[in-house]
Length: 267
Image (cartoon, rainbow, N blue to C red; front, side):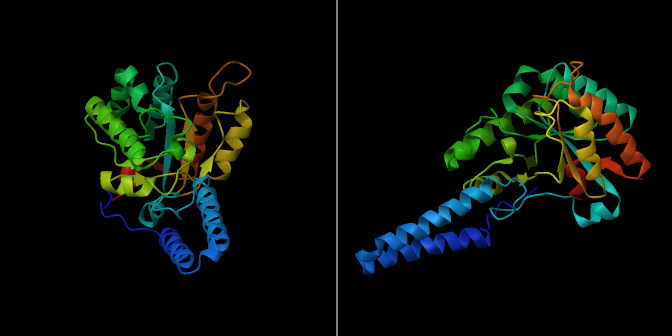
């Protein structure tokens, strides 16, 4: 579990200092308000751009790869988002069973509440369920501290009650966030996780394209991203994840890589 003490990053500390200097400058010389406003506006644009970069750690700690010890053990992580889905998730679990692979499912709280048996089955088969917010709203990255706390706490409660397993990782919807998120994560003891390779399998229905993108990033320490919820369909109507997953698991096994849950890599 993450240390609950929030430590602002260099960018956040610099942004706070800039706002203070701008205020002091305007108080000392009101004629400087245009320069002060311009500096603050540029800073806000920078913070917004960083928030739109899912793999950035400028706003706080963010797992884009597994720790060095896990990499040395030739471990790799498969993360599966936006479920549980009553049709797709059980098939994903069956595929994982065939390859004896463990995965991390970032589940949406309201979906877990709708399909609790599917969520419990994920854990029963040896996988981990982590926090992907309660509602997966499109405006998640625009929330403030209270909104983030409400969303994350609700999902923590929902997922813990259903699975008996308290989430220790969080992934933001679409990976987007703002500077108010990291203090909330620290208070809840959650670690932010993004990915090192993804295939955009919610938008691309071509399984071969998705597969190639993931196989390019297949190496020790990688964190792969696929989706059991909101999965794109191939021209045959099959969820892309079901077409892609066997090839990814087989290729990893051939390379001597072992799939572990993110929480296993903490140790």
